[in-house]
Length: 195
Image (tube, rainbow, N blue to C red; front, side):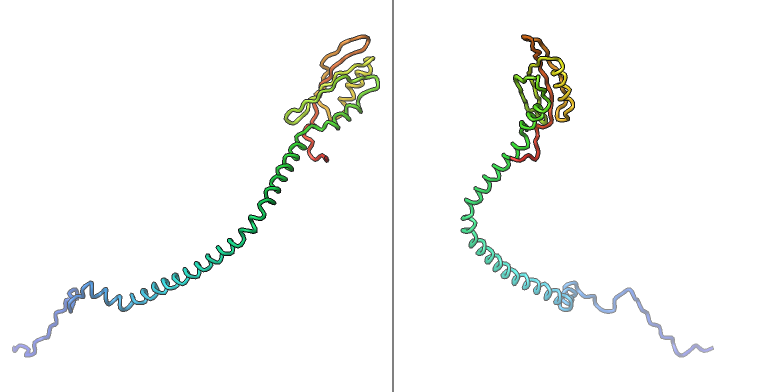
């Protein structure tokens, strides 16, 4: 048998091997800069121009604000004496307020003691000492009868202004009973008292 007279045509393809010469990195970079890079370059230049224009606007705003501040300086300096006077007044008011709130309300204490004192009791000395939040009261007095003494102490105990009422000492002198009463009152901080 005779052999085929047409030989088969065979094509050898190597898909892993490039068909043309590979491009160099510099050529790829230039091609990319000319295609996509130019848009990035235009965008960056636009941002630079906007920032440059904004800088001039902000400098102009800063200068106008500085001029406005400098125009207000004489007016503010003219108010310096008023400010000193206002600060002094505020300091005086703060001192008055602290004295008002921290002082003992002597008139109320004396009125409460006078209301509870029977006619037969004669007060010889009265001491009021201010503590942190309370006032201690020491009353030295004389009475002619035990009933007046008892009535005086019971009257102080019935008044809610006073607490810790103690009969510190009792003595007999020239037919009169001399005694010392100590008490505590919470009227040391007067709060909202009127002057």
